Length: 290
Length: 195
Image 1 (cartoon, helix red, strand yellow):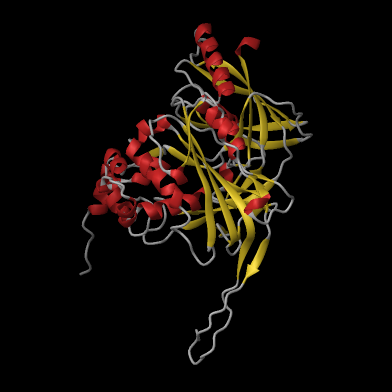
Image 2 (cartoon, rainbow over the protein chains, first blue to last red; image 1 turned 180 degrees about the horizontal axis):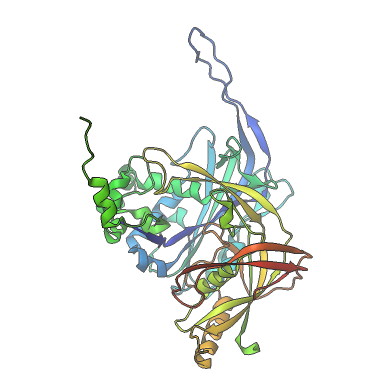
């Protein structure tokens, strides 16, 4: 497979906190000895976390891209089934309290869309009631009833209550995530400090998609959730251990039919196809020393 | 002239219109390139025989930059490695008003009817929130927080000249060949004219 760019059927945007965030130090103590010849613990595990925050992460389903990537309704159902678990199945020491408050899935009445995305996202974003909100009660949750009754919206579902019928129309979605003493996404450029710009917390799309892939790569999840799927089409491109040389041998059609995340999130290969003379040159037997 | 003009306002939390001279540490231009604005209109509506050509840009938010680091674990990571960290300098809270002129893809000017239909389609999609694919501010993850008609706002007083700014990567009309074009671009009082 040579030069090849696929724009995915699902677009995940950069998330942001609704209000300013406070970054604090969290230190945990390891009571057992962790070094040779020491039988007492120490407190080496200092890390920076956000005291409390509510983040929103937008995402979109582009039906016209589905045809280009061979993505199917089944692929979208898997995606929608994973979203409610994207944080509770990815807990770690630096994000012990991350709660998905809503996973809004708003289906338009057609594949091109029927209502401006900003209307949907503005309506569903919680509003801070105080300048320094410290709990979920300090936010005014979205009143989705008016939006659900809007004729431009085919259906409005919180995926926490189940996955709706998916018909292939455009979807505008929003994850609403509450975090307490957690670092939802560290900045690799700043020693894993919680990402922020001007005290607004940030969650990268890469971080969200990595969590989704991790769940999608686990057959136990599908078994537990009772989701039937075609395992031959559920390969994950962006994970450790996959063989790039094997992937290069695939045709674009084989590639797309094999990798679920490539169909949904896209992929790019920029390598030009080798010219026959270059291949011949590489495979030419090298002279051996006398 | 008026019958072929379309107005679009866009706003996002972040934007990145990468200067190709910045190499692997992506650094954004201070405002969008001609081809980026053309592509944004293309995501909203397109037609085989006409397209929206950016004519004027009003920068409606102060110029502000931030570091944005991402972890890349895609197909180009080194075999056996988890991924690598990519650095970029991006725009914060970019907000723009763009004026497009819908023109024919034909060299000879084409059919006025095709241009008129394209303008109507683009205007309708902008107003109704329809699009072919989700518009974004230079990079896929920087999705818009507003795409729609112009709202009541004045451009910022920004005066800057970007020397040898990338104008377009491919030939202008349709399915063009790779032919990058660079030109000095001036922003005066927050307004950029794309020649």
